[in-house]
Structures are given as C-alpha cells and as structure tokens.
Length: 395
Image (cartoon, rainbow, N blue to C red; front, top):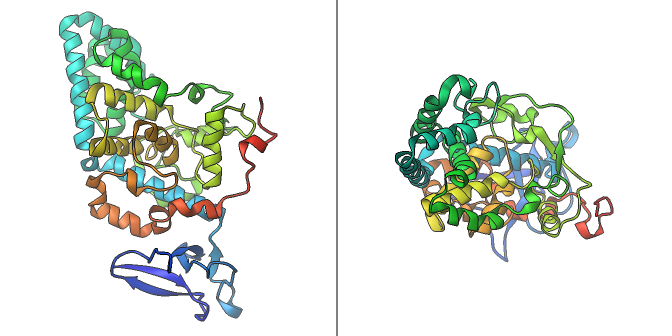
C-alpha cells in the first residue's frame, strides 16, 4: 500500500499522511489531486484540486517546512524519474530481451548471409564503415567495445568482436551495433531489408533532425568530459541515481537549446509541445531513435504491440539511461512509428514486461507525480512565447 502526503489546512506541518490500498490517489470529476509542494526532504505533497491554489508552507514560527512545486521542481523530478527509468531499462535486460534478441538474431543472419556470399567484402565493409565506432582510438562513444584503434585490432578482430558483442554485449553495445549496421553496413552491402529501412527513413528521421540551424541545439560552451553519471540528471543530482558501466560523453552535457533556431513547421510544433507541457530538453529530438527503429523494422519486423514497446524501452535504456536524450526526445519519434504516446505521460508506451514488475511498482510510487500525473505538468510550465510569436527565431 502506498503512502501519500496530502495538503492540510489545519495540520501545522501543512500536510497529513494517508495510506491508499489501491496505490493510487482518486482521479475523477469529483475528486482528484495534483502535485502542490515538496518537503525539505523533497517528498511530494499533493493537494486536492481546488485546494491547490494559494500557498501556506506550514511550520509556523519555526519556519516553512515546505517548498513550492513549481516549474523547476517539475523538471528536476522529471529528470530523476526518467533517469531511473532509463537505468532500469539499461541494466535489467529481462524487460526488453525478447524484442532486442529478435533484432540481434536477424542482423546476425543478415551478416552471416553476406559473409558466406563474399567473405572479404563483408568483413572489409564492416571494418571500414563501422569499425571505428566500436574500436575508437581513445574516443568515448557510448557502446564502444574497446578504445584501441581499429587498425591495431585488424579486420578479422573487428568482425569477431562486433559479432560477439551483438550476441553477448551490454545493451548499449548491442543497440549501437543495430544502429551502425542499419545506417552504414546495410546501404553498402544491400539486401532485402534495405527496402523497408529506406521506407521508414523519411518518416522517422526527418530532414530537420540533422539540420544544425533548425534542430534547435548548439554546442555547450564548456567541452564535456566522459562520466559514469547515469541518466540525464544535472551534475548536482548525480548522487541521486546510479551509474553506467562505461564512462562516456553524455549528450545532455554536450548541447544546450538554441533559442534563436531557424523556423521550421515541424520543429516549431515540437518545441511548442515541449514548452507548453514543461518537458525536458536533453540534446534535441532524437535521430538515433529513428535509425534504431528503422533497423528494428527492417531486420526484426517489430512494427506494433508488445515487441515494439519492448524495443522502444530498450532505446530509452540506451539513450535516456545513457544520458543522450530525454524521454520525450525519443518518444516524439517513436510516436511516428505507431507507438502509443501522450506527451508527458509514460504508462501507455511501456511494455507489460515492465508494467507487471516490482521495479515498475517501486518507480511509480517514488515518482507518482511524474509517472502517473506527468501529462498534467502544463500547470507548471514556464512562460514561453509560441513559435509563431517568438521574434527571437530566425527565418
């Protein structure tokens, strides 16, 4: 049974505790609750809708015991919740293994078919096109196999290493291989999956995603360093979440929002949605989500239902747990592939493998304000002009 803190106009603390046998707060036309305040220990205090207006922080002469649940608090809590979700997906493979395994097996079949058709061409193509992503010569890309130069490993070593990681590697390595084979190897070697891959490209990776003027991000002023901080939390929140197994340069440390981007119809709609709903900027809309889904559709046929939800949760593990993008930056792309998604919400997009788990139950209880009520956070948005009125945007 879940315990909730509820605003009280009579209790000196400003709130009372209630226990819910359903693990839920009422949510109906007659009675519903919204996040209203935080305790000094950052526990959320909910207020009945209608009683959420106005502020009395409790504490009397001893000083306030509560802090307002405002735009900053909403985004901070969302960063924590999404980071926890990403790390769960990254580290606990049981939630996504069936779907990820199906794509991995199909890619392995494809590569072996190409290999037995022309061994030297296949190995050399893999070495030339994607070897440097996994044998990085000191680079800190997420999902790398080794920081040795690919030339020192050799063509055969790179081939064997990538095939081994595809079957036995960490989730970040496996998805990095899915992405790289789809983007670089499939166009070079060809084959029947290429038709499906190319069909989804314009849908899932639109031109403005990669246009530096329209994408809505610029390089951060300080050069980022590799870190094992998990998820997309700010550095000051790093002790609140776990770490990842591989130090890497996070996307959220590499970029900041471009407030003077060039106008583009779809980009305008995307950023207006982010602002209205008080969602997070991580590194801009996720092109990698699109290319991963292209690979999943082309090789694994994961086009709907539970398998698609599992694969998208794996993407969340890789990109959100890995610190590359916010949840919305991935989901806005996955939605184009047919994934159920309401901006700001989580549950409709998640697979049953996770929803039926104790890990989901604990995550939902800890971040009830986000997991269950995240789509209501338009109430906490900061003031942003809609794109069509924003004179800072360029034409």
